[in-house]
Image (cartoon, rainbow over all chains, first blue to last red; front, side):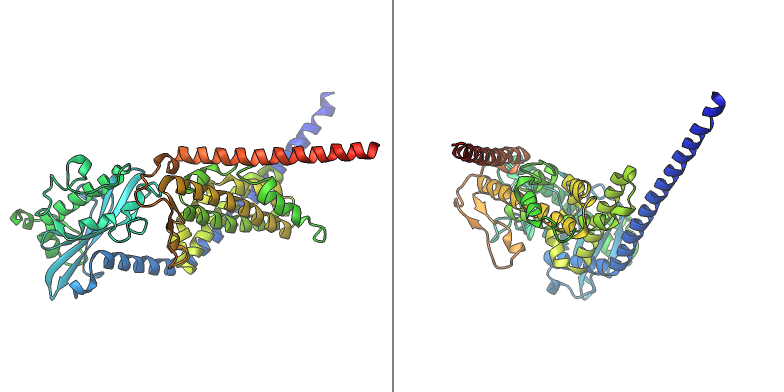
Length: 239
Length: 228
């Protein structure tokens, strides 16, 4: 009896193996084909994506720093900044240095507010050499649409004077560090009722960025373009 | 097959009878997350139509090569790959549109209505019918999410079509309740989406029950008449 039965399961087993192998093979082919499709698309679009990312960066910088205020090649005059706790950045960022006839005008740097309502809020901040914040924009955020997203002037319902423009041109002479907070925290910065967290995150991040950039501006401007930033003895001279 | 494809039935199913939200309650994650204003909702709806059309088309073309046992991973693979490709293509070639729709495209991967239609329809039907089904299911999603966004936006902020200048430059949203409207916060938060959606589903069920009852009445009258 066992002699007769043995070949049958063996045959069935072979067939299962065969079917499995065939199915796995097809799955593998599909994976390869669609990975190739994605890779091909990525390769085909990469130059355009990089160009538009560059254009986007240009546009953002011109939002925070009027191009008439400097005359150097801003995107080329840069210092790489390692991850920085004061700015909230977790990886290398680039600081752009605006100059007019070699005299320092402003620094354009990235800052991150880690404590938004739905995670990190990325900011681009222009800080003048007179220790004032020239302007600031939100570059990436996930705040609640229609509620916390007024930190982005495109989404702000107050088109005439978007929330984030109240930082334009102010320094610690106007609002000292203890006043550079939202009104709910006893500061001077307006927030919208019911959506304080987003405003607080941006406000605090901008205060830290201004403090840091003011302390380190001499060192930042002294670095050779394209080098990595190292806080040097120049910092000690700053008040 | 192509001559008697019931396009009218596919359209009615997609837009109303088997509406992805009102009848099947599928894809609630992006639905609830993005329907806080009309413009956001409408943009997600448009992006969903594009992806559903392409996903149904691709699966229908490839359906004879897909082994039944591993169809789900392959469907997921196809959908995810197509969403990536659409995302990249939009970003590269329609950059202005991408700035508006772009953030919504990756969200579509989380919408199980795409997988559901691929599995239930595209894997079993011809290319043209499948593409049409994807389009119509997308239209059904579009109108429901747009209406949901419209209602939530109105309750929460007293406005309609705010942010429409991003879609149509020069056109502005309308503030119906004036600047002193204090706003109704919960409508814009996820619980508000559940409340409004609940009322919309209740409304559509009421309508369906009512038409069914009227139809039953008609049949009863007709039967009575014929038995005389």
